Image 1 (cartoon, rainbow over the protein chains, first blue to last red):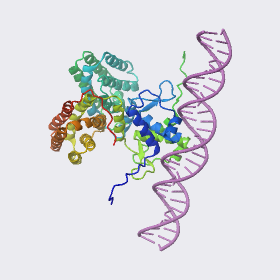
Image 2 (spheres, chains in turn blue, purple, orange, red):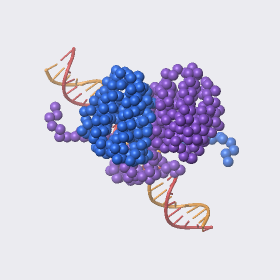
Image 3 (spheres, rainbow over the protein chains, first blue to last red):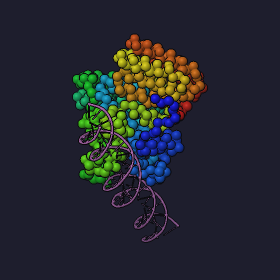
Image 4 (cartoon, rainbow over the protein chains, first blue to last red):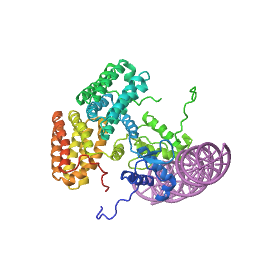
Length: 249
Length: 249
DNA sequence: ATGGTAGGATTGTCCGACAATCCGAATTGC
DNA sequence: GCAATTCGGATTGTCGGACAATCCTACCAT
């Protein structure tokens, strides 16, 4: 048995992970600020005293975490960024592997969306309203293409969530949205009239948020989400159906 | 100007990303099943016709996504896994960079936790109840160590969420939890009596879930979350205070 | 059968190299 | 003098090869 504790367990973590942690720590503690360019790979390798290949592996890790990304226009350096929507993809992927059912997605939406709509109505700015209106318009436009319609529906929810100005809610709702998109394919294919109902609900929600009528916004969002469920039932889709990944384009 | 559209934009994605996507696709479409070992790096490199270094970069990406991981006991091969709790860390990290406030975390908890408690009471199995009871007991035991207490509080919420058997809710609640832990440090430090109140609320919630009294579970969870807010106010913490990363051990 | 050992396979890390690209500065043209 | 062009350096993406450490497997000895 261990009579005396003299030695701490030796860290067996691979170097690339420790490099990643070191950089990540600098980002989290704000030593490296958002938008700042990281040192070059060679530079980092020398600073850490490791090979460039090792640094690159660490960078890939940070990149997929969303902590760093290539500069937008130029693909040169790497800059620090908030892990905004990058995470949504990963989360959705993970969820699809958990054999999520339509009923589960619906339950989550039912919990989250009405309060989100309420908060959005209370706190929305003019810019938020414009974004939401825009999202609704986008949906109204591209109803022919199912893939575009699916994306537009998610975009609408997303815009409403952003209006709450609460990143925790935005990220909390992201998983449900991500999976919803995959499940909508079935629905929109089989129930054409669902598209109209969705547009209808969006119109009411937009109006309520515009008038900053929190109660009404919540109510209509509730109906909107409830409608999805009804749509699935009408489409003859078993609510315990396991959602498959969206078809690739 | 572009008179006719003849050419699609050529994919300029780096190879390591395309390799990652290819593997990821095989995992999502279940060609590679959970727990299965991936081919060796050299093998993959030959199959894809790229260098091993490139494959490694792709693997790092998948690893941090949670799609693959080292075998538990042995660190040999890489196996496919569901991205369970790996994601929580990343999400929390991202949130801390968004300058989240106590008020925002609280709002999210207030939205999510009561319905979760309700659903948990309705659907919990015997095993779920045991896990929840266990989590509450863990909190009751380690109240001296603040870090342990913080973790235990999160563990309790986590156990309750698991009892809903809804991965979407579990993942949706993860971000809030992650950030809550960081914010609790301040609270527990300044308001010792908060610890007792937390234990008290947990006891009531456990009892309600045990009796499968959904309404009561929801009610007590509401009080529990509301109590956090009161605690922050009592501690003299500005609710708009930006939550800092938890102190390292 | 138990125990131990030799080989092979695999991962983590390193070195060096090269094409493609981008940034910026020097050079050239008007 | 100012603008456009060109050239060189810096940086990234990818490749090839290499080696120690470790783990698995199968074989061998007691």
